[in-house]
Length: 148
Image (cartoon, rainbow, N blue to C red; front, side, top):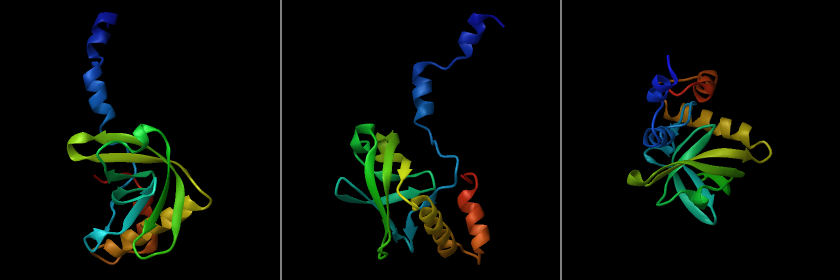
């Protein structure tokens, strides 16, 4: 194949931008709801925002613009009615203006935040399962590849 043929196979800038805005998570994500109501929340710069979804890699929120203009930012996660908090830093990696949605990845979680987040997600899977599910099975779902 010639260099010219190879160049024709390369996506243009618009196609690359579209691919970059596509879903980035490879791990299963979960709606951040319990009984149809927001159950996971994030506090960014003093503002409490309901999460749309969450995974061990990150979360998405309703937003008119990417948090912190796309730079890394401090956050605090919590669950409705539960005093436990997870703090860390995240960065917006995906913004869909037409849906007013920002996807953020975790840059760092403080202390045992990663372990506690995993436990939170396992509990969410068990609570929302339509059939009885073991903690082991829920942990495999949380750690496994995206099913959607």
